[in-house]
Image 1 (cartoon, rainbow, N blue to C red):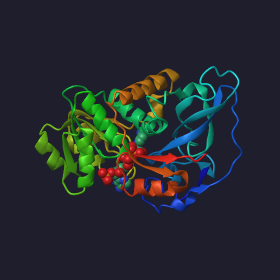
Image 2: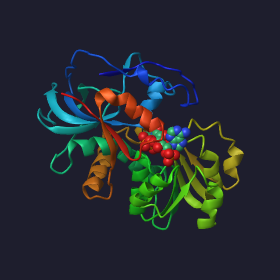
Image 3: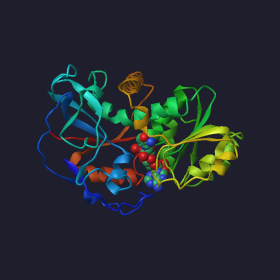
Image 4: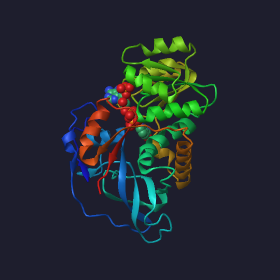
Length: 332
Ligand code: NDP
């Protein structure tokens, strides 16, 4: 088990002291499955930027110490009353409620997706779930991308960024991506980006408007504070700003007149808001799995860390050293 301690709850910023040492292993009694629940022996857990927000205190945790992690894959070891599927021994992938960094976790049977490990191995399943759902919900519901669109994907070499590029290309858009280094530019190009701008060195509005003078139809921005204003500058009239994250810090309050200049649409969606009903949840999960098996979505694991090295995984993610997905291997 890995517990998090509330460290530096600096509202509005993830840039405070890191306190990676707050991540410590603890032993707890194994969970038991109640009605409608299953217990999963986790094999892999995904590391997501949101985990760092809960660790740093940017997003409050329920209670401390707390366990982290919002996605995992593994094998069902116990089913509770009234559960017809999955069964003991099945391979499943699921969105965890802040307890994926554990050997055994209980979850709702209804929200666990049975997978065929020959078609979707457990590591790929854990690697693609949350970021795949995010990218899929953003390009189908926040701003439905369609053929002929121009879109900007900020942090295009990141876990979610790579998948956004792939899905925007799949739906027929021309994609411009931003990244911080030349190495990351190659990752974004390999994911399908048509143009890449190094936002660490270049003036993004200037570079982007040279490529497409009318501006883009939509901006997908998970970086937040550092990129939000430039995103507004590169949108065309009636363009859509989809601000979905804060890896550089939260976006300060917006002056509505700033979006009135070009009749822009502004959204700040949360993945969970698109997955409220079981129907929506399974529709998106099934589609993400299908797209992964069809290789439209091609998840790249940057590194698989042992659970004991979770602090290093957080440090690499926040230190902008990673591309693609970070995974944790959970020991037996
Ligand atoms: P990433 O793999 O994208 O890692 C974050 C990337 O952000 C870095 O690699 C870095 O890329 C870029 N970045 C830019 N500025 C900074 C900075 N100051 N500090 C650190 N990183 C910076 O992470 P995820 O794919 O897990 O998440 C991406 C974003 O999506 C996060 O903001 C996350 O919260 C959000 N998200 C939101 C969801 C929602 O429901 N709304 C769901 C899932 C994710 P580079 O070096 O190229 O700049």
